Length: 253
Image 1 (cartoon, rainbow, N blue to C red):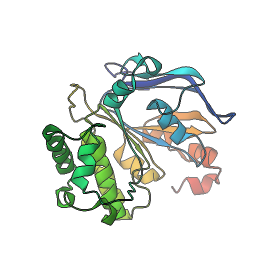
Image 2 (cartoon, helix red, strand yellow; image 1 turned 180 degrees about the horizontal axis):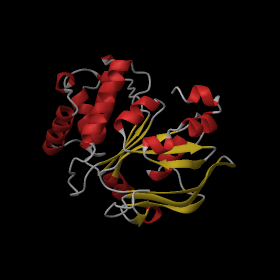
Image 3 (cartoon, rainbow, N blue to C red; image 1 turned 120 degrees about the vertical axis):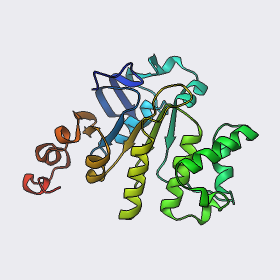
Image 4 (tube, helix red, strand yellow; image 1 turned 90 degrees about the horizontal axis):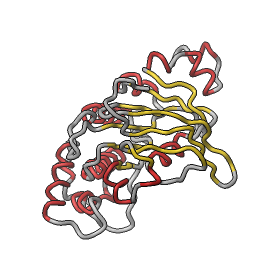
């Protein structure tokens, strides 16, 4: 937990989430402040995506609560939540032709994009270094290009929190590094809400987390097993325990 954060931008208090009669998360408590770069890691099935969905209001808490911009999330409207946190999925798939600039502009709101929406969409695309993709059909993009478009879509919403679910999934080494560097540069940007942008992202690649994130939350068996700096969390003992691999192999990761 970041004790120096000026206020709580995103948090959970004794959070439990049950889905389909199964407890996915239990006793989860955390606090995230403005401008933080937070990586969520853990083995498959640990509850990482459910945690992300709960923090963004996509799934309700069974007990406990989620805090968003200092308020319990259940008290907030969908519009307020959407203005506070943008969720970026690991891929974009569309069944029809859509240019990147159109996709990002429409992502700013449910109604047709205004001239201001298009302007902000173009700025977001430029911010992620993807101006060469403006007029491309999203269906023709490579995996790395689609991820840039997805991040631009999240940025265009101009929220203080950008939440990403496996942003480097299915990318080669070069594109993984490029996305990781981009996220590092985006954290701390001032948003229209006059706060520094917070990045919260789910990763499987521990090397990216060590190099680009100042805080790591390790999720294991539906609980937070560790929360701190990469050096504190990604120890051989923690990795061995969470992923169930021999200690000597974990020490080499």
